[in-house]
Every structure is written in structure tokens, then in C-alpha cells.
Image (cartoon, rainbow, N blue to C red):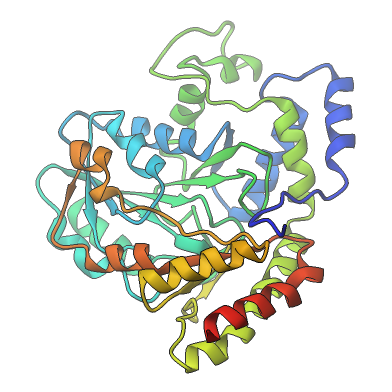
Length: 375
């Protein structure tokens, strides 16, 4: 069986974990957490970077930092994971779903302005497959209407838009280090603050609403409960694992891009024949090869392809069921206009296996895919 995903080890993870244990600090914000924070600041340019136990946690912190209240609205795509919406729903806000672009499968920036109402407080963009949304246009819309921007960059570590790292263009950004992502810690995430506006309060929210971090820096003589908050910190074992991955981030990205390019070159013939559509990467976007997907001609062809690959021992999967048509989306959110592209893409998209170490199996995968696409 060739799995859809296989977590990658750099070889440094276990020694880091042993070191964390030897340090006698396994709870949050130990030496390895600080090392990860420094790496994130250096590689993204964010004013503040805080590790969290998941990208979901980072999104929930974003909703808290924006002081969202019941009835507030947040514009977002429907073609995304449930955490994107849940983070805001938990504050009582209403997700307003708009359609996606046909090329990058990101939120269609041309539809955002029409979805804005007096209740709109923020726009949450999702950088699908590590390819950036059109942030210049979206930032301009936000400025015109006084809205905050949250970047769900769960898939976007090491990706850029016009040279700017994803997660640092809007007011707040959320990253994921889940085992299915490029740089991993099993579970894990990070909140990025573009500037100092949210930095101090983010630190407090992350520490259960206390000013504990200021206490450890000697800025106050004792710490106490000062704000809303929860326990959003990851343990030091998680950070130790992640630090090993960050140390090899450039190498990981280069290897994934090589695999992605192999798929892309192979699929060109099938695209020319009208059998599939390949991913589209705008010239001003540097992507991270988070995934390689194909758009099939119809849902039936996709089902045939996935089942055929499974029969050959190769794991291929579809992606999101649109949030606007899910029970939770119907109950807690609303769709702005028709979301035809979202529905269409959801029915036809298939993802191919992509993980470091898959290289010896690529010929088998491509041969199996060839036979199914030509049948």
C-alpha cells in the first residue's frame, strides 16, 4: 500500500525530545518553544509568533483578539476545513460564505465587497494548497471598509505572495504543523501577529488569560488573571519535534517541490487531452508543494479514479465537503449568492499522495494513474 500521507522524520526529532526531557521542562514555553518562536519571527518577519497546540487554536485566538460578539459577521470561503468557521462561531459570529476562484480555488476577491454588511467585522482568507489568495485586492477592500483580515495559512508555511510570507500580510495569521502538513509536530500550530497591535494581548490569551509571561520576564512581581483566555500552549515535546523540522525546512520544501513538479510534468499530457485540469500557480505566488491535486471531468470519473487507485494499493482522496451545505454551515452560517464553483470543485477534485520518501514509488503511481485516466 502506498499511503496518501506518511509523516517525515529529519532524524533530529528524538534527540531533541531527549534533550527537552534532560532540561527538566516538558510543559509549554521551554527552550525549544522559544527556539521555534525565534525561527518563525526570522522566517516570516512577524512581530510576534506564538506556538499553539493546533492551527484551530490559533484561529480561535484570532477571533478572541478581534473581540467578535454574537451577530458579527466574518466573510470566508466555504471550501475549507471546519476549523476556519468554528473559530468564529464559538464567539457567536456568523460565517458568511462566498464562492472561490476557478483557477487557484481560493476565495474570489471579486465577490467579497458585495457580501459586506454593517455587521461585517473581518475577512478570513484561506490559502488553498499553499497558494496565496489575491492579498493586494483583499487588503484594499479591508482598508476601505475598516475590516480586519485573518489569514488561515494552515497549508501555507514557506509559501509567499509577492515575496511576503503567508500569514503575515493580514492582521493575524494561523499556521498548522499537523502531521499532514509540510513541517510537522503531529498536532500543532502557530499564531502570527503582523505588528504589535495584538502581540501583548495574544500572549495573555494564550496563557489562560493571565500575564504569566510578563511575570517570567520580570515585568510584574506576580501574575494574575487579567483577560479572557485558555490553555493554547503546546508541550515542550511537541516543540522539540517541531524545532527539528524547522531546522530542515528549506530541504523539506525543496524535496516536496521536486515531487510536485514530477506530477505536474506528467499530468500535462492528460490536461492537453482534456482528461484532467492541473493546479494553477500565479506567477506572483511562491508555493510550498503542500499538495498535488487534479480536477476530474466529473464526479463519476473522480470516483472511478479513487477506487481504481485504491484497488492498485495507492491512497488518493478527495477534499472538503463545502461548509455552506453542511449541517453546521446551514445552522451557524449563511451563503452569499450561489457557490457554484465551490460545489463543482468539491465534486471533482482528487489529491495524489505526496510525501518525502515517496520518490521510489512515483513510477508505480504514475503508471497506475495513466491506465485509469486513459481507460
